[in-house]
Length: 233
Ligand code: BV8
Image (tube, rainbow, N blue to C red):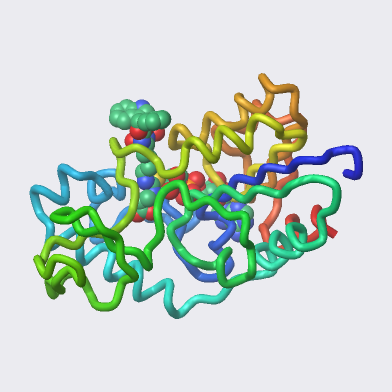
């Protein structure tokens, strides 16, 4: 990989699957991305939040509580090692995941394009805070004291975070690696095409074929805790 200077990595729920965090659409779990019989696409939207805030707050309180009990796995650690050891270029890690397993594994050049489960956003005074208590209990905003906190997570129909930083990283990409994502959701799923248009090498590391597999020069299939360390090391 020595001639490949700038690496951009995109991760999805599959990189956290072996840490015990449910993916959204995994056929394997038989639920196909359902939660309490709700499709994630139906819960992770501003309309759902306006219609039934309690349902959405409960969904995220449940996800947050589950994530707290999980640990980074060998794939998260391998990606942090790559960033620490890479010389002569940059490693940018873009994640679609709202969990903090990349953070806890030690990745620093990290873009959470769909937000973070440990952050809450006050829609009254537009400030962001570290999550401290279940939102279903209606905690007051630390800044304006109003009970207007929502998950600081990008829902369907909302604009992903740090798109400028993402496009900046993609401008100089030599190698684009997609790990553990179904390629179902845009604009994340469109990044591989951007990489190809920019003449970069593209590699997919996933459990199985994804909706984007055809766009990659190479795909390696297997569990992330096996295929990612092999690729990094
Ligand atoms: C936007 C946060 C404009 C929430 C998420 C038609 C109608 C309406 C909208 C659209 C439309 N067409 C396109 C859109 C836009 C829409 C979209 O793409 N919809 C899809 C459903 C068609 N996108 C949006 O609304 C986005 N915003 O477009 O704004 C815009 C655009 C550009 C610039 C400016 C403005 C916002 C989308 C963000 C939604 N929020 N997450 C939460 O987490 O609760 S999406 C969520 O699903 C994830 O974040 C991720 O992005 C997405 C896909 O999930 P994956 O991570 O891929 O997980 P999945 O379960 O699907 O797949 C797991 C994969 O891992 C599988 O391939 C599996 O094989 C593999 N795997 C499993 N185990 C392992 C493994 N791999 C390795 N090892 C293992 N052990």
